Length: 130
Image (cartoon, rainbow, N blue to C red; front, side, top):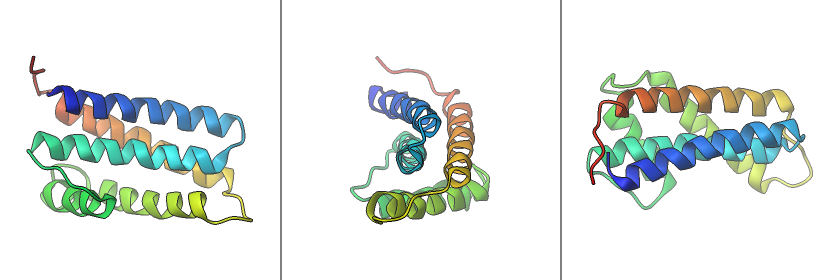
């Protein structure tokens, strides 16, 4: 595993923690946003392990679906979770005047935790490069 991939996984772990912490404080929109970013960083780390990098969120999401979900390397519902998480995050970040229900944020966090666990399992077989 390269240093960049390790950094992406570290960011994902921190974002899952931040999501949980913010949910506990009642900041549901921030919690959902951090959960999305945890999944996004996991997808980016997996793609980087394939030598792939992209400059937009939609490109990462599409490539993750093509290279990992469609091929069966990860459960297909993780790709759907990433797509849904982006939609929830966009709503949470940009829609003013309404709050995100706590149960929606909680579900996003659970999905991010599962996404991270699957990613760590897949990348666990990779050895660190100096």
